[in-house]
Length: 264
Image (cartoon, rainbow, N blue to C red; front, side, top):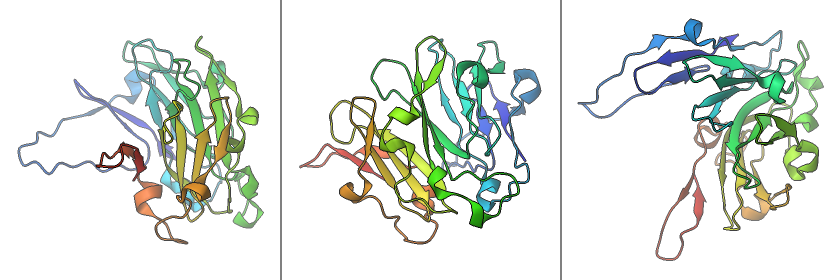
């Protein structure tokens, strides 16, 4: 299992799930010091395999941080392996956290890989996207994994501290366009790629087709990866570290002819 660890400084806190590297190229940069604050914060996440021997599970998963309840404090969502509930740690504002996933309706049981907070319906509240690899029940060999179980869970924020699962009504978002048994979802990012006022979702994948979900503005999404020309990893058939393991970034690259969003 992997342990999620909260480290505290007097300024910015660090959450570690799996392995992370941090460095500075500035010779004069001052290295902050951290302390393990798991015990005092109530943060007890453990990335548990439970006899799930998929090699991708040893990479842990991507957490997502945001103030989902708009109380001024940053909360933390952490994905789990298939059959174990995802965890949402609400920031109590006093240096402690409480896992409220089951209470608020986001304790999914799929093979969750990473998550993203996005206000997809423009109601002023952050909604939760959870991106999932194909389900891998404990002890099940790869040849028995059903690729069609890959997809995205969408939880709509009701604005009262709870969520409702609207995945079934989200259109193409609920399914990966071309899943394979050993696929591993990597970087995800949101941006308004067509300037219609709604945020769209890009999903990069290791060893399988990338996906671009266009937000239709009515609660549904349409997959446009092939149409947009972003479906193929830069190294087809091989892990693409630049788009899969690392974070995918949308940025506005202004040129003489375009102020549109570009994907890196």
